[in-house]
Amino acid sequence: MPATTWSAPRHILPALALAAAVLALGALGAQRELPAARMAPAAGASAPGPHEAVELARKLDRLAPRGVYVTIDAVENRLQVRRGATVLREAVCSSGTGSVLEDPRSGRRWVFDTPRGARTVLEKRRDPVWTRPEWSYVESGEPLPARWSDRIDDASLGDFALYLGDGYMIHGTLYQRYLGRNVTHGCVRLGDDDLAYVYRTVPVGATVLIY
Image (cartoon, rainbow, N blue to C red; front, side):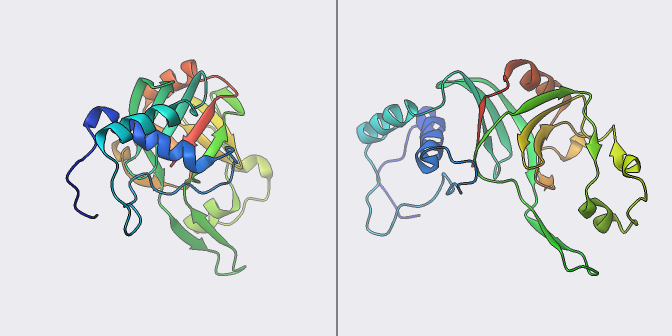
């Protein structure tokens, strides 16, 4: 990153990161890619001064979702529950590996990444169950079960799940020692206490910003 004579004070960095995410989202399209909030300025661009940076953060903060919402930094594996500029809770999470799996028989490929952009909490469930998809059997080397009911897994998702669409969820994990790492197939995992808080606090219809 180019050298500069000024760096943003630590207390406004979260606002700037959120502002960058909100600005990149535009109309909050569900599938729009978010650039990394920590991107270097374009060549020849000068870094904003302290007054400009604070004013930018204030202006863009007004674009943030109203009410309670969630931000997920899928690089640093940090989840925040926010109301406006106030952070209600910060948690260590796990997100997608970005790895690719290919079925040698069919040639079908899956990319295990957590999608960047804006999503909405479509549904919340207590004691959720997971229906294992095809890639789970390809990955483990197991044959597909003959009966659909044999795909049901009622243990892996933890006590609660928030559904974000397209199979993506915020849910629990059996492997809490791996929190903070990019180890998932695209979902966002939380520890038990943090998951319970998110389930209680974040309503259906809340915005989830992933960057």
